[in-house]
Image 1 (cartoon, rainbow, N blue to C red):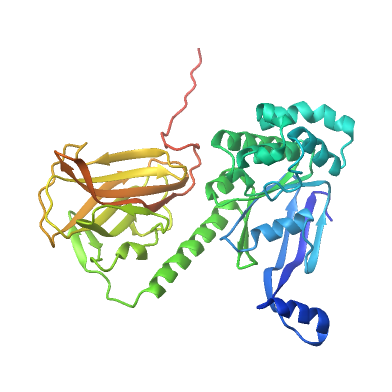
Image 2 (cartoon, rainbow, N blue to C red):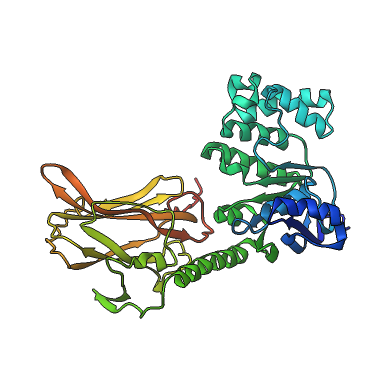
Length: 439
């Protein structure tokens, strides 16, 4: 293996035997190779790749694509069915929350237990103990049994121990999703320090912006096979296109074929919007979020929307600073007056990035009668940094006696994905400029 080559994977595969009934497992034991009572399920198959020293690899893919299985085999906690894995140096892994911890032991005792298992002497652990405790930042809980820890405290201590074992290869499987934002930032600073020391890092995440911003390469698994490996941005694009296209096909297959919605003229725009009281066309949009929350008294319904970014309809993602137009079709089932339309943009964590409505903007909306259709047009520029955002839409009426009454509120209805920017990170794309002058 090349001196800079740390991980070499060849023909890697993991097959599980799936039994339809418990007794089939017993029969297989009795008959062994004479008869087969199971179905083969290949969680991972025919995987080949190499990783050089000091590189950070982001592993992405849909749930069930084989990401965790792959990392477990590389970490040595799972034996492969086929293929080989060659690793140069010490491997530490943070795979499953609580793995390797004795729940009856205190945090202090588990630090010494885990570090000794990895080959550190007591003197070496003593030397690093204060740094581990400081990084974990769990206070006096370090002396309490870990069975009383929250999931966040668990991952803080587990990451702190793993990061201070001087690994050559560091593997993390989605554990960072448990920690709070500040701790996540601390973890990524630790990643940067490890990279500077030549540590190779593999981590699984669904936050593709982290892959683009922090990784040298991305590895995309699909149905247990390696679909693509390479520079983060094109691999992430391939993953997003595959994910959203699969969702769109699934939604289309679940509904009978129908004529495309009619073209409506909205100001200077031509848009296709459909939907009715018994047909929610929102579900067929590529950017629809099936984890939305919806409530209201039903006097009006949001039956369709269309996201357009830089002239492209229903895109898988939008670029930073693009013109975005969101068209919404609202069907009124009962008469309504004092109507208020609103929209909110939030992060995945629920932080409001922007919110407005026609009442705040002092834009009066006329009364509507049962059967009326209104088409709304929200226009904005995506001054957002890379990441995932969700747009909520609402229709309400102002009632002098009872306050605002929700007719239809669809929270996190639209998934807005902003692709990478080379000029910063955070939430808002402020486009700050720097100039230096000689004093």
